[in-house]
Length: 304
Image: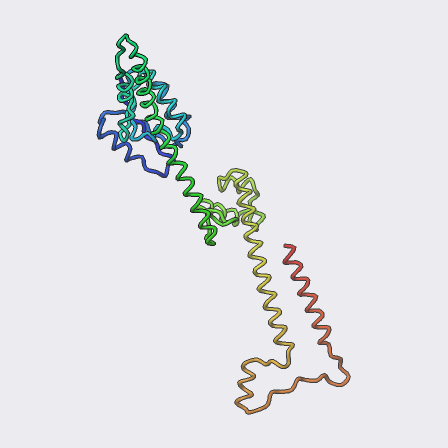
């Protein structure tokens, strides 16, 4: 007869040490089976392995009923299946539903008397057995309800956060980037021919050790980043051109140095220069040319 301790957590981020410690306090030589898997299904890899090797007389210890199952219907069916196979189940936090307790409740029926009173006694015995089963069902239902309540609280919390204008989760388009991915992208950006390097795609894949799909995904991201940087530089250049043109072609506005000099010399600001006789004023043509250039630059920015 073997004694097993089954410990389960839902995700690998959780700690299983508490369950192991609680079981070993009561059963120091127990063989521990650990698993990171949801309790809403009994089709769990490690539990399935343990289930296949269990035999009559073996014992399985759980820290609580929720470690066995968080599905009320499946949990109770599994409990009855193991009980009928002669396997003892122990729940450290719910000893009232241990199979030994259940067995005593079922065997503690009142003996028949051979008289008409037996009809009443039979009813009492059936009630006691139903009551014992109900206690087990309630334990599994409570375990399932805990999960449902947790999910409901999570949904309500997310909804409240959204209604309050808070960002929930990662922003769209923003991904998590690791040091490894950053290093790989840097190599692609330096060595790939598409970005001015000397290596083709196959050579870059070998250099970075990336799979084909990952490599091309990184390459698209690099191209998008470079495109965004290029657009920013073009916009900055356009802004500088506009500011320079407005300053140089507005005779009413003088540079700060000229204004200070004129104040020192107590001179009036110079009048705008008039075109000499015989020479045409080309300011309109210059303005038109600059406007066309601006339109062309904006078109290029939008296209690329």
